[in-house]
Amino acid sequence: MTRRLTRYLLLFTITLALPIHATEANCSPQAIHRPLVNDFFSRGDYEGAIARLEQAKQQQDACRPETLDADWYWLRSDLSLAYLKAGREQDCLVLLGRLINNTASFQDIRQNLENEYRLHRALETNQQLCGAAHEKRLSAYRSPPCPQPVRGALASVATAADRCLVLLPVTEAESCPKLEEWQHGKPLRQLSPSKDDITSSLADTSRCCSIQTLRVSKDNGQYRIRLQGEGRDCYGGTAYDLIDTLYLLKGNELVPEQDFSGTR
Image 1 (cartoon, one colour):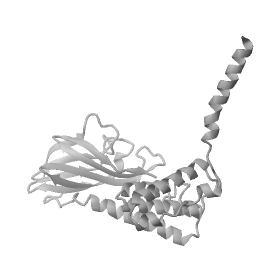
Image 2 (cartoon, rainbow, N blue to C red):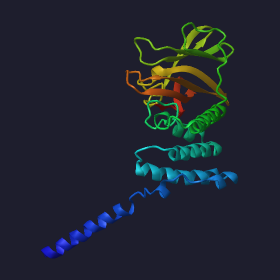
Image 3 (tube, helix red, strand yellow):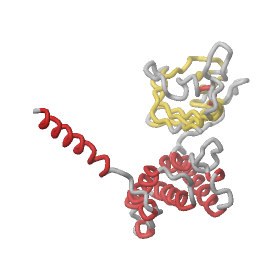
Image 4 (cartoon, helix red, strand yellow):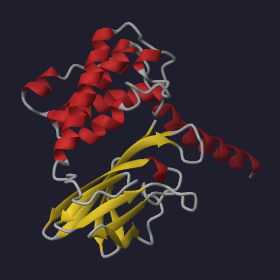
C-alpha cells in the first residue's frame, strides 16, 4: 500500500511539473527579436501588426532582459505607431509614457541609449502624434471665457449667457479644488463627485490638488466636463500625476465617464 501511494505521489508531482516546463519563456535572440510588420502596414492591417508586435513584446517582457537595446525600443516604436494607425491613441500614449520624457522610469530611453538620436526622434514623434490624435478626439471640449471672470479662480468657462462653471483652488479647509456654477457673478451651486466615486481625479485626495484646467462640452442638452492638470502627489509623495478626466454632469453630481490620467 505504501509503495502504491509513493508511486501515485511521484506521478502526481511529475504531472504538476510538466506545464511549468512547457510554458518556460523562449529567450533565444530569434524569439525576442523585433518582428518586421511592413506587410501589415502596407495593406492597412494595423490590428494584425499589433497582434504580431504584442506577441513579441510579451515574449521580451517574459525574458526580462538585463539591458534594453535598440531592438527593444524599435519594437515599441513600431507598436505605438500601429496603435495610432488603428485609432488606439490611448494605448500608444500609455506605452510611450514609460519610454520617453519620463526621468522617473527606468525604461526611459535617455537612461539606456543616450546617443540613439534617430530612435529618440521616432519615439518623441509618435508620442506627439498620439497626443494630437487624443486632443482631436476630445475637440468638442472647449473653454469659452466666462463673461464675468472670478478673481482667484483656477479656471472658468461659460455655459450660457449668464452662467459659468468655476474651478476654485484648494483651501486650508479642503484637500481638493471646488467646482461651482456661478450666475451673474455669484455662486449658484457646488458640483461634487458622485457619492460612489472615490477614485476619479476630483475625488482622489492624493491627486486632486494637481487639477488646474477646465473644459466643457454640451451634447443633446447634457454637459460634460474635462478636468486636466499635473503635479506631485498631494501628500508629498514622489509620484507625478498627469490628470485628464471626463465627467458627465447630472444634477449637482459629476459622474466619471473616462479617465485618461497617468502617473510618472
